[in-house]
Image (cartoon, rainbow, N blue to C red):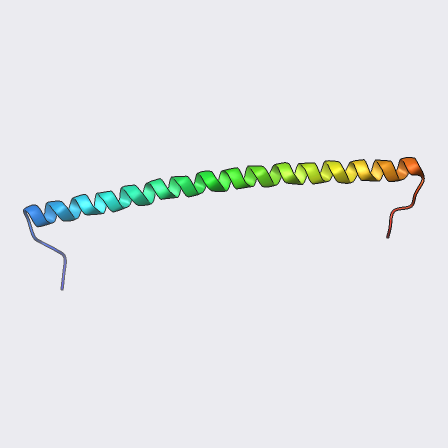
Length: 70
């Protein structure tokens, strides 16, 4: 029960398999990070929109001379 010390086709296959698995992992990681960046950008835009709407509502309340609910 130690390291695989085989040489030849089996060892080459195992190296290629590991590289393939690492390549898939790397690609999926990049995709996940890209999706996270898109999500963060969208959330930032939503927060800006909500802040703008809140400001606009406060301005309308002030313009109408109403008191905001406490």
